[in-house]
Amino acid sequence: MMGAALREIEAGPLELVLSRLDRPRRSGRGYLCRCPAHEDRAASLSIAAGDDGRVLLHCFAGCSVDDVVAALGLQRRDLFPPNLRRAHTPEERRAAWRASREAAWAAALGVLGREALVIEIAAGSLAAGEPLSAEDLARLRVACERVEGARAVLT
Image (cartoon, rainbow, N blue to C red; front, side):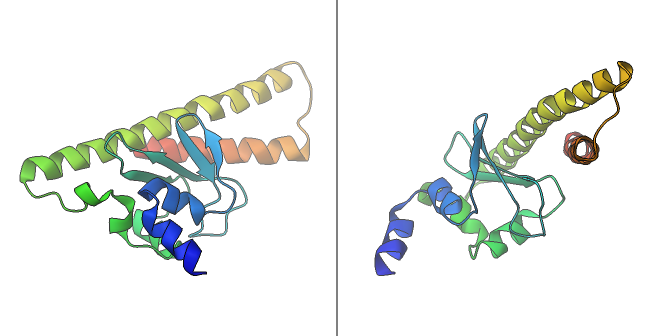
């Protein structure tokens, strides 16, 4: 037990967060997994590392960063490397906010790209007169929910 705690202290913020998640999988420049802050049937939590080393989290089901961090047993400050745990000047705070927004937009655009493909495939099947199975309909609903979540981030 002591060894695991020591490894967490020595790990960077991204490794710390990933170590506490259930089966995160690579997706683009980051990771996707089930959100620990709500009952999640499909991966709705996007995790990525910012250019400055901070961990960027976005739950497309709507959980706040604070809810996700609390569910992981962490604090918001654990998402930042030691040199960024406190933005001292207004310019640093604005730059941190801007980087956070840009990362959320990038994650939302990635989701839109993936889910648009699911919707396109479903539309093609329907246009060809092929009915969608119950599993396909369920996946199409998830795609629509994720598109709506991404839209909310981008507006």
